[in-house]
Length: 394
Image (cartoon, rainbow, N blue to C red; front, side):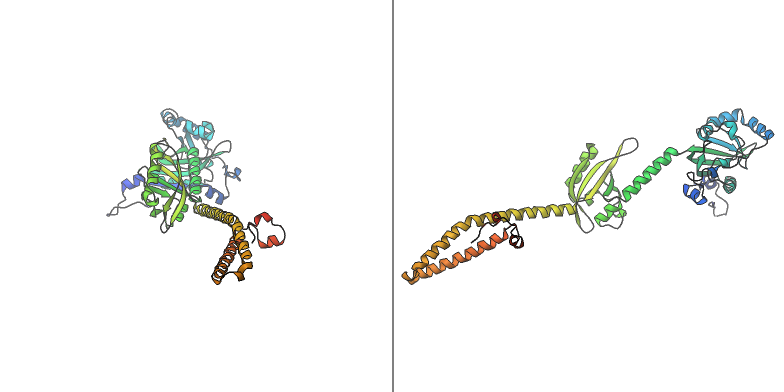
């Protein structure tokens, strides 16, 4: 591990004091080693390294009294080991974590506790603690019953009488489960089809997922981060109503509105709810934004179709009501033509003009009637149509 040096070439002691070496024994590493806890649990058991009887009695004697009381008062599990990794002392928390008795732990190799650990890990720890403040290991610890739990282990060098390694073990099962849930939620949000937006109480955007960025036509979420909600929503009144109902009223807000993208305006349905921290305090709002442009286009198409149907129905009714008077007019004109030769020329011209107008009127009615038929000519030819659908025949 590299340390910062001063211009004169000396190592910065403060940086050395604060520095930490991290060693992660992740499930991925275990899988590569072929030693996952699911498939090869037995391979994770290592043969304990036991000190001689005299040595064990000496270690036990040294571990009693004030040192043991001190270790038992520590919240984390503590294993005190020799430099070669033999456990010499364990506190109450370590016993609770690992399900071993204290006497069962003393004399075992620390490597039998950490899944997938080997002599190389111990060598790295020894080398690191001689120059670093402490070492942090992310690993799985194996209990006596063969089960495992994720742990964060801090290691430092204890210089009391002789150098020993001190392992502080913290069970991070709850934290890891929380992290896994948060990771799953993050993946779900990042891959959601709907746009997700998070804003603070001041109404400024702090997060936008890829779906929302794509919906708005931007290149990156950075284009939206830090911008006010009014920049995204076309209607300022919508933003005010949303913030008032969610932030002040503590209620969910739902409605349809439009957002302005980089080069377009999009119809959306928005659901806004309060964003709260672990203490239940409101820290902002979360918006779920769904593109309803297709739905709006379908609604518009249905509305136009309904208007056209209403118009066609009106035309059909008009054809029906106009058809009979038109028939009477044409019939009477045909009767008048019998006296065509007996009337003066001026009257003949009037009759010709009326007959021509009646003929034109009849053609118009026929075309309108054809436009209002509900069934096709092909269907009529198959004799499947009802006569009731023929509004007027002239």
